[in-house]
Length: 112
Length: 112
Image 1 (cartoon, rainbow over the protein chains, first blue to last red):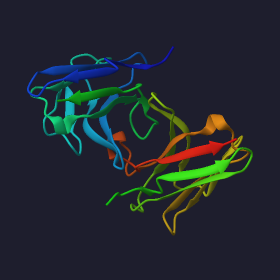
Image 2 (image 1 turned 90 degrees about the horizontal axis):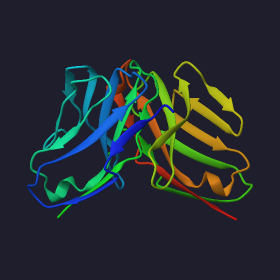
Image 3 (image 1 turned 30 degrees about the horizontal axis):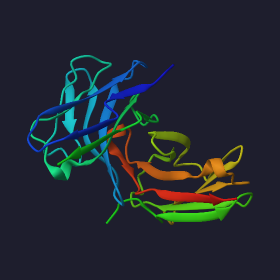
């Protein structure tokens, strides 16, 4: 089944403790992206990747890192999480261009 | 404010038609999308329309695009309780997924 898989689904952590949210897609998509969803704000793009080893900042990159060492994986790294990073995070992928995005089921992160 | 604007809530009775409206700001948008988000899940592509089209129909869904007013609407005919979800409007401003902008989402509640 074609899908985007994020792990974990839920995560509660404390300020400053490094964490990684994994994202994997099995559709051979070139484009991958991370979004955060906050009430009343819709989805805001954090980072995106057009292909392996090619990443760039989205609208809200501060406090986040990403890597794209393989085509299928695009982990999101929070080196020192803070409470304002409490949010619902989505990974998405596509074939590129303006083709529709395929989303994972989300990771709900709480930073205390 | 939001580049893509939607009303936050809509409530209808089962069997009625639902109309969800969206306004966007970039006249050079190439594609406009409607995504559906059910509780605990990621965004699922419902339908999309290319900017040179005025209307697209797909079973119970009708998308209308008014480029002059930069207005997009999604009509759901014979709305069912299973249609209760958050609906996101999104515009693609170029030919890359990283140029995509999302609205804040409209929560549709269908009452029996």
